[in-house]
Length: 120
Image 1: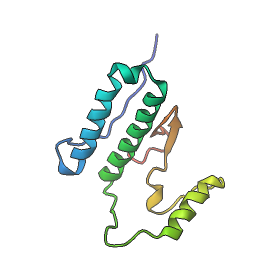
Image 2: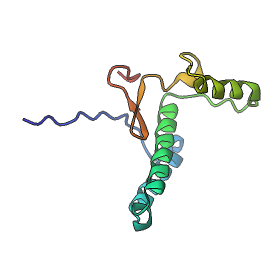
Image 3: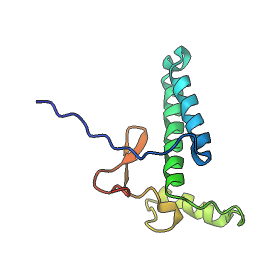
């Protein structure tokens, strides 16, 4: 007997204004992945896969109602700190930047970890 992999999904309405741009971006990526020029280039497919990972991250951020702080300018010194932390082998476990906790890297795409999914 062969067991089939279990797939879980977070559902959202692609017509909802909050998700509309992300759904359109994913659709465009899918169209590009179907083109013969993209199929002939492993590098382009890899870039589109990475871009699709960003779309997924934004879907989850939107689903979890991440609050974009438009009234507050970016704190450049904090951005540099956040960039250097993983470069030095450490990752934060608290705060807004930790919304992807419970994810694991599989190939080129981040997917929910079965043991730490924040949606269980």
